[in-house]
Image (cartoon, rainbow, N blue to C red; front, side, top):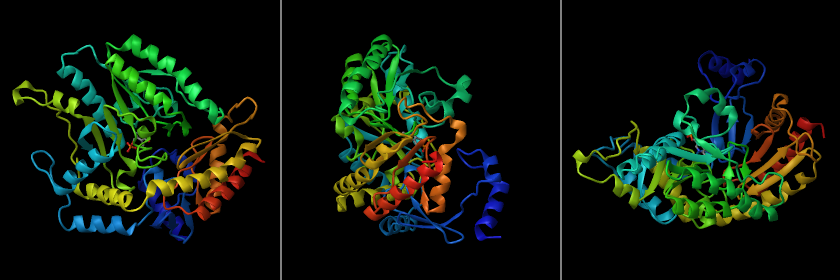
Length: 449
Ligand SMILES: *Cc1c(COP(=O)(O)O)cnc(C)c1O
């Protein structure tokens, strides 16, 4: 038995894996990873895999990054954790100061949780509670986009509209309205703006109709990641900010996946020149090291909760590990790397190389769309290029790409029929070339051409 097989057998006896039909592992090998270095993962048999998905979109500066490792080790010997109610600590103070300085204008306070879904829950509860504290008791509802994704706890799932994750739990969920997404699937880039302007009519109408009952609109800015890396133009966010203000409804921007340089600016909202009422961050916040999330909000929201104790206006939400010092120190090390190196400029060069290497896929007879925002490229396989008819999901074409990738040392993990590249920012142009070559071969394995 190989070392990999040994660990896989032990694993399957006691571990239940996320987002996985466990029966698949009767024939699909589980890959036990022994160590990581930069963009590379190494299994117990010594095979290496290029981490093209940034370990589920969290890792931006590579595995075992020396600067981040050191910062966490130093923090570990100082303070591993402390209650954040009535107590505080240096890493959480510094991190909050720095986050309020680098995020879009107007976000003055940071509230912490320990994963993205919890950040969504916090933002939803805070928005609702803000209106309650202002005596607006009719405001109890949320509005979101079809195909959006904001996490999988029940509140977050209710504002998410990806059927695969949501439909089973429908009877448990809050009743949330969703409007058609401004997704520019299949459109040439120069038509994105006009398309988004026209799609905004649905949002405008829903806001107009629902304004008295709506607490907030929640969207993923620019890229609907879990919904298949579907993308749209920043003008939609501009229109949305203006409309939310006009209708007296909060705007929650979920930058959990796109924050920290992924789309070509430090935050995606910058491309539209807008500030939300709530900004949710997680994933790359700690460069993929430790679970941490944060909701930044405005002074106006903060002030709505600030009163004498007996007024009972406080936000009484907590998690055991809120503001964990080790996680905060990983986040501080991450921000140091952004401050030291010109990460955004370097990303632009890498993104340009990704563009050049993905362009050719447009010609492929089973590619319906190639799209990009910064360091995310998506190549969508279709059954029929002319009509954009998708391959039936049961055919699992993406799985063929995944399996081919593994055989060539590249971790490509398509979302259904969507192959995407979302590598750590320390990837090299040569490694992007390898990703592109293996993607081409994987397409052939999946589509026969
Ligand atoms: C991943 C993700 C979440 C949920 O974060 P978890 O840490 O997985 O709970 C929420 N919103 C977006 C946009 C995400 O990509």
